[in-house]
Length: 274
Image (cartoon, rainbow, N blue to C red; front, side, top):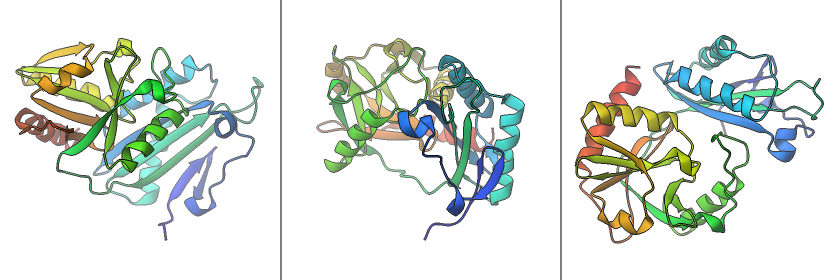
């Protein structure tokens, strides 16, 4: 049986077992909305301002009017942590257009919370998928919309085949991103990651890792990485708010992950001391 947590829905705090979503919500019906996942350790939300700025700018992009500003969202996020007595966990905030497209309709705001479970520490196996086989929906600039069906289909197929995460490449056989994570490679003294002009989501953890790599005097190459070139990489890892940084490998390729493990150690130090 799932534990009962306290959620936020449109100005009300409710037990998770009593949380309800309107069948008329255009986010539920048509995917008109955004979400953001935030991580907190020792009751401290990591990179909070960056998450808030991303969701507020995303709401502008999809033309979703609302009454929330940075201060009010920060208050809600800190309040949900206090109400649930969790030291470490993940918060998900979802904002939808509401129950119609009428300009007088209020948006629906949902905030949920769950514990941060132990994650994998060993390298995980990834598989490369042609993203044209899945309906990957990308916006420019990239946003975290509720339209993730292609990503989830790829994730489901990946798990069916016994892999941890799919890594996409586009019609030009250029690596883009994972289903729900960013991908990085290391070659010599350079950190390579797909550039944002490919429609890649500018992950909060992605930017943090890049700043750590710069501090460690790695060359940063945000570029177009050909699928055929990944076999020549020295190391690779994936990242997200939930997992932080996780070394990865694939069929007929592996690594000792020496630089990756150094970056991972510094990342988690920063997470715990942000």
